[in-house]
Image (cartoon, rainbow, N blue to C red):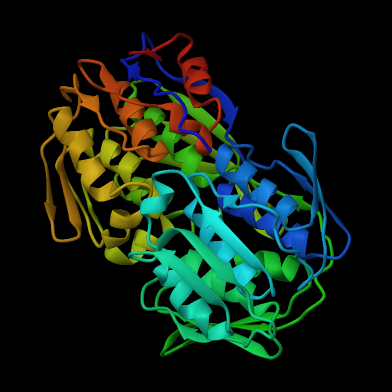
Length: 448
């Protein structure tokens, strides 16, 4: 995938409050998995609400290359005719995973269990991200991996002819590594056992059950133990993809920061392993409530109402990081507008995201006159409510969440905030600028 031309943007305080109801794009984690499980199932899976960002389109193309029939019927509406567990075929060309670490790591799990040869690559950002954390445990299935130095893409894999079930204790909490191991275990005879030290998002376990696999979970002294019975027949099942809570975070925080605002974000996934930001913002005093709670496709969903609030600084414990790892950049923006100091603890995982997201978030704050420090793996932000200077240009490092966080900041600063490149926002949140400007009834976000 070629690098899109840079798209500099800037954001300034809107003329009035943000108001309205909106939907955000479908959950990225669930969208990737819906396409992959559809490809592994027998029969035809109908998907609605699929995120049509570049990351997910890369997964759709990869499933097609591996032999599944993948068809777009309309906006967010897709159909996947699968090949059954173990039925994927060797791809004719290199698989380009774009900017998506989730897609690349989960796909390595899938490929480890199939006796095929494949080569994966991605954009410049993805080629810097570590894959050793999945290739090491997956090698125990009998799969072979060849990688660049540091375990990075492009890499080649030859999947196992008779994959062995894994028994793996995760060294750090990672839903991607856990999911890769479980996907490899689908093709192995016997029981695959994965132990995670802290609970991470469980969309893979939920979707495995939704498609008919036998998965059990036990909380033990060792950690959370997930057991998967290998070689199930997965049966096609419809998937309704809820709105992505990581995308909802941006209009929610914007509404909290712009005086007089009231915004309703509809149909958001409320999986308890993904709602750390909501918990944290409420601890900061945020006027947030959930309406119309229901269950769709095995996942809890609801509508989130956010109203302008004067926030206060808090300490965010390290144990919450797995449930909000993608939301720390925008939480740092909320912290900049809060009274007092906010300390976010245990952010080591942020150093290996699309960018070194911890350093990039700190730089974003510093460029706009916000006092902050990094101590070890903690980010400390000193808030200046109603008096955030702004005026800086933020380097996004090809990271969509850094770009969106900076633009939300610009809605609450004295001087506009610019970003060097917003082109990558489309990987997770197509139409972000139009949607935010719609809430403002104007164009506070526009070309820099």
